[in-house]
Length: 288
Image (cartoon, rainbow, N blue to C red; front, side):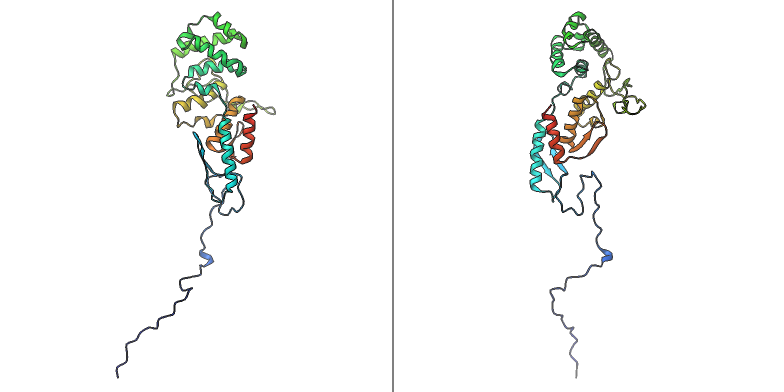
């Protein structure tokens, strides 16, 4: 008698038929826990609310604030959003930014601002520019007339001679971004300390370093404002460590608003912004 063909027995389906046990020796590698200040990477395990947030924010549109972290507290993100809008409105207004398209005007302005309050120096600056609007005109200015305009600022004779000399040399040897000149000033970041003597380091070369009055304040102002105007992609301002309090206030604002970083004129970038830092900075800027 012929045997029937063999048919394998069909197993009953089980709800756990597709499940499997993963060996602990082949478990997925855990994500890297970010180091201190590493704001652009998300922690592998972070169940606590954040006070330091990785942010994106359009410099020209403060309403575009967002947080990359999916675990950030929405209320905290809204609080940061509100603070960033307030920070935008607290932006310091400096004459250097208004005239960044003309290095000659910037040099005239910082010559007047050096050791003089802005509320006194800036009106005099505009009077000079209205009277002599170009380097050629100021180079031919009557020295006594210029002294009379500068008298209220003090050291009027020295400033008048410097402004005329500056304008003449500016015409003879104008600055060029393709031709940086050695600087006579020492680097602000290497100045003398109250506790010990540091070796003086020559300031970095700039296109205006050869002109009269190009001290560290003028060079800092040029590198922060003029280089960014000449090339919007320039990041020269990031390497400036000024000692002038108004430039320090401006860079604190710019680092916090444009780069979401805390910044110190002595140590540079310190880490990511926090709610507490932004609130403190706004208070500092608003209560000038």
